[in-house]
Amino acid sequence: MVEHYIKPLYDKIFIMPVARHIHNTTNQHPILLTCISCITGIIAAIFIALNFPIMACLFLLLSGYLDSLDGAYARLTSKTSQKGAVLDIISDRIVELAIVIGLYLLHPEIRDLAIVLMLGSMFLCITSFLVVGIFNQNDGQKSFHYSPGIIERPETFLFFIAMIFLPQFFSLLAFIFVCLVLLTAFVRLRQFFK
Image (cartoon, rainbow, N blue to C red):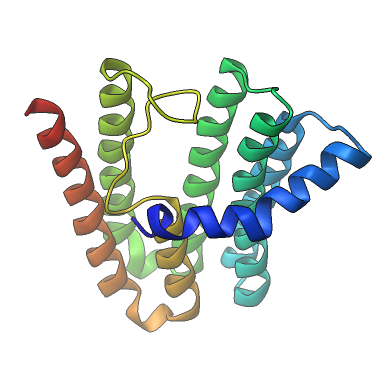
């Protein structure tokens, strides 16, 4: 939801200049950026579990930034591919799973139910996203049909950061997150069935 409003400006200021620089200086393949994004997300999860919140957030933000950069760079260099799109989606899910596991490992004795509910809601939401994407024609810049929702990657990362820095409100934040993720899945399915 937030991405819809800020993405054009964000891309113009923070993404495209870097994508052009990479293209002009190194001409790396975009899949390399996807892999680095995945690795930095896993490192963020390790820092969460070890209770280093600042390092966790820095690596999480770096992972999100690289995730934005890889797609823009692929489009700029005409290196978009089905393999890249698949790897990007799987990398995103690996990072999100790692972060949730990191949040769990920080306080497993009190976060078990909240984590299970978060994972369940995320599972249902991504399933709705992928299934609706299969049956809708792609009319956007991405390699697949992109169905926007209430909770997307930026909102998810904001919730993760809040959970990292405000552990005393973890259960409340997790409950709100679960409700919004389930609402996203419901709205997406409702729009599809109309």
